[in-house]
Image 1 (cartoon, one colour):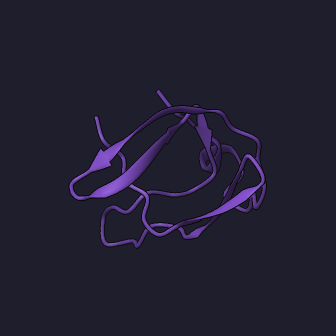
Image 2 (cartoon, rainbow, N blue to C red):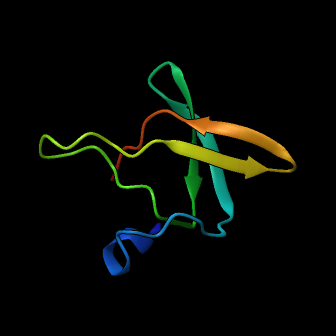
Length: 68
């Protein structure tokens, strides 16, 4: 379960997290984080966008989904 940092601080712009899984969501690569400040798509609100820094590489976040 991902700790939803955006619930405590919706203005949070930077955070540390661990990748707990890498998989596909439909035809797209996806990462599961242990904690996240990225707000997921839902209720008509678009998902947050941004960048993750993983091992020195910048990975663009193009979509955020909450999947049970």
